[in-house]
Image (cartoon, rainbow, N blue to C red; front, side, top):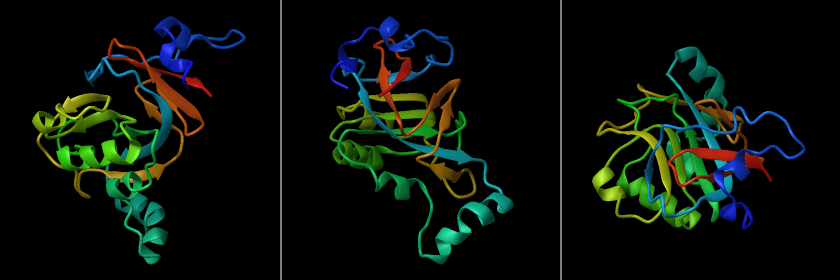
Amino acid sequence: MARAAKETSAEEIAIPGGGSPYSQYEGDFRVLHPEIKMAVRPITVMFMPPRQDLDSVVTAGLRDRGVTMNNQYVIDMLQPGDVFVVDLYGKHEGGAIVGDNLFYYIMKATKGGGLVVDGSFRDLDGIQEMLMPCYYRYAHPSAMTPQTATVAGFNVPIRIGILPSCPAIWWSETRKASPSFRRL
């Protein structure tokens, strides 16, 4: 990861041994703290629109064991050096993954690892003062509720735009507000 922090964006999307550079880059993110280079291990979470049939399959077994599957459950698993990579299916309104309190919690738990959200977060005024890299699509004042989004999986392969992300792949980003990735 130390080597990755020094690579250029062209080096980041190069495929060792050749191969296609497509699906190695995703643009059109807004960025907080572009001066902080992010090269970290992702902890992924995938959200979907809430559906009764999905909820009965994904969360019923966990609920029987006393586990509530939500964004806080996954955030509690974060460790130093992690980046929280969230597939919120581009959701804008009614689905902000975190506000300033949970952003602060993520920053402390990951020791400033980072946050990538294909969707929205809230409390931009409070968050922008915290020194942790964050790539996001939108800032919106609405909060996520069980009626607006549901966890469909965590630490599973997800998609951020056209960019795949897996727990076995680390994230590195360019300073031009567009994350890219390579395998460890």
